[in-house]
Amino acid sequence: MSKLAGKVAVVTGASKGIGAGIAKELAAQGASVVVNYASSKQDADKVVAEISKAGGKAIAVGGSVSKAAEIDQLFSETKKAFGKVDILVNNAGVYAFAPLDQITEEEIERIFGTNVTGLLLATKAGTALFPDEGGSIINIGSVVAENTPAGSAVYTGTKGAVDAITRVLAKELGPKKIRVNAVNPGPVVTEGFKASGFEGSDFINQAVKDTPLGRIGYPDDIASVVAFLASDDARWVTGSLLQAAGGLR
Image (spheres, rainbow, N blue to C red):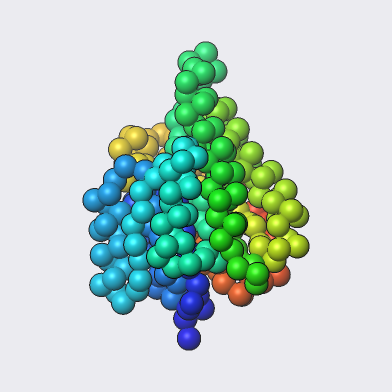
């Protein structure tokens, strides 16, 4: 029997990249999946089509996690379609790298608005739909919170916040039987990774050299860890930060 049969999962930022990989893996494990997207409906619909073709169940729902009204609409649509939420994957995130003298107030607000404020507001709205038997929240952080590369003060700051928030909410939501964990990837090959010019860069080449398993990551490397945390196999795991980075530190 599929490990997530009968479960409902919401994956934010799931139209492509890591989020799409997570949505497809959770569906393959038996969950009904809400594929959230901020702007790319076409990509989200493609993910839903792939899930449906494989025999799974999914819907696409638009909404930016940086906007409270759109978060409320996301979970309103989820409730209408499935009646509850058992699994919430806070995957939506943005990133940019810049030295200290080039950081702007607007960029700080943009990155923190999605990566931190959005995560908190989505969790607040999502937990209201969890059943009495609880469920699982998985936050997608980053290995940068540990290896703190130069030029990443804002982005790394948000992911350090995600680590801390994960542990706070594990304590706060534990009495409601809601487990809260984080998966912290290293570099992962996605559409955004390629568009940002990271592929083949000196930064990535060095990261691969520093990775004990000797390669870069792919979305399915992260998705399988998320599926574990979402399942009853991880029933005694909460407040944990799972590095999924091939040993990169």
